[in-house]
Length: 328
Image 1 (cartoon, rainbow, N blue to C red):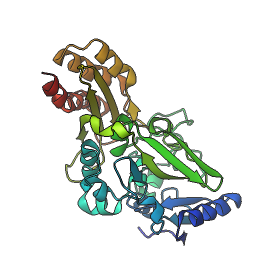
Image 2 (cartoon, one colour):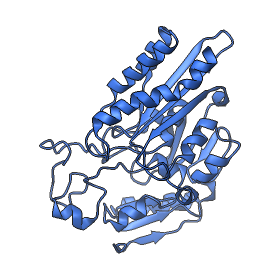
Image 3 (cartoon, helix red, strand yellow):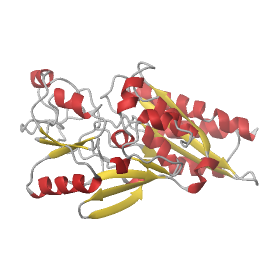
Image 4 (cartoon, one colour):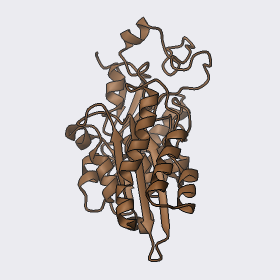
């Protein structure tokens, strides 16, 4: 399909980008930010919620910094996956995103802010028109959700990005900026359980970077992913497990999931219960079952919800192999 027309803005620095965004917001003109463009531009070609203005961040060098505790929003996924500064589990998650070509263009900020996906939504305009519109892209028709019908109040499109669960387990803080100032919050508080709204970003606001605690290197773990094709696809389910064992053999444990609901989830209650009643492999089995019960996938990706829930249990156990070995 042909790309619809829009005005492209190319600011040279962060201040200029925020000023352009503020002017568009004040004039009530819709716009999108574009970083690598690997998700936004294909969606535009499919005529999915196209805006009249697009602000490119390609020239905003302030967003490119990468260190052990600082990850700029414009850091390329390839650079994150291959840098010596990147935590090994985060590097593995970054390396699992899509293909080599896309990782050279896609960015950290773009992956964190990835649009939610649903097979009623991520189709061509002609396909969607032929079977009627969906709630997320209703083209002014006030269409109902095609997944959970007769509710027409909330979109259940699925968040299918890989970096968020690992960063949540590493206790990352996300930093936002607009012409009005800056604000920060735990990454876990950034997402909203609505496939249309997706996160707490306000109009004119963008992600500048993520910061990690100084003790990040003390955490070990793994990221396991279910997808249709090993070389390409979004996660149908993703599980990050990270742990830290102090000299007194006291265990800290964190588990987060992605690809199962409209937000990634940090499973604090389940991990707290596991640590408080630790009993080796039995505890891992109980944890995996608890995570399986807690996730609520719906029928809007290629694999059935029942299969994805079963695989969450499998992925959790796989991700905990290193933990059992370390404690044995």
